Image (tube, one colour):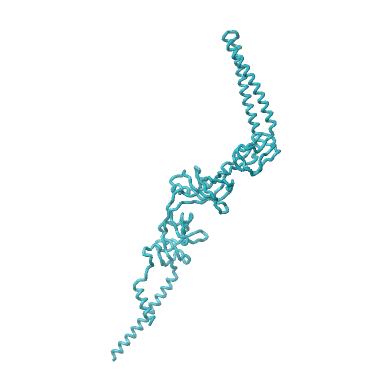
Length: 401
């Protein structure tokens, strides 16, 4: 009987001690859980690679292929204009007239002088032919023949000079009609009818060609070097798109078909030029916008999920894990999207580990709790160890009791 009482007492003490031990362990685990709960839980992924077409964006300016200032080439009063400001004109179309009478008279005088010189030259040419025969027959002195030859040469020279003067007079007469040198849209008339103009008067108006149009743009020398590396050569044509300053894209694509032969030392850029068809004259000389230039070949670049990025005043960034699995901020530069991913130019490398979820509570340099790894082959999260599982089972048994 006494032995049974001792056994019962021992069992009671054992149960009480076990209960106290479990309570103590439970408190310890609760503290650990609370402490663990204060560490942000995150998922991690490695930065992947994607074959993408490189693209670079920069400021651009629209430039007419032909920009011509219409000038007076002779002096005189402007008597007529044959167009309205803003008209589309064709090459060779008459735009202005300078009073022609003076130049008509000058051309007539030059023609008369030419006719006179020709008549004199013809006379002495015939005389020379006669004297050549008379000299052979010794009917005239050789000195008379030489005199006729000199006269003939002099009047032939005068005839040539008169012909040159006549052509010059006709040229000046032709300049009384000021013509469009190229096809294009004509601008504001700077000198109106009734004014006296000279070759030094400056432009009467300006003509800008409208189709095709050029777009010039500066590209950073590093970006140009990357384009050359991807495409394998500098002298290749590349596809470009023009974006108006309103943000709207021009509907037709252009071709980058020229680059300058030097880097601007002050800006570190190289000037490139693209050609665009402009049938509806939407591109206007002098307009500013942006250009997007695309590589011909694809390049292997890092991509990160858009959901794994955050932004502050300094720009777009991701959390990259260091060798101790501590997060640090890495600012990235993007160059467009591929599906739901950002294509990254700078900031991360292929294979870097980044945080993909739980970003809001992450503090750079502070501990994190990785609860999932996107690249885990098993696709499962780590399970608690066997001791924790046994303890949890015992705990559930006592709680039921």
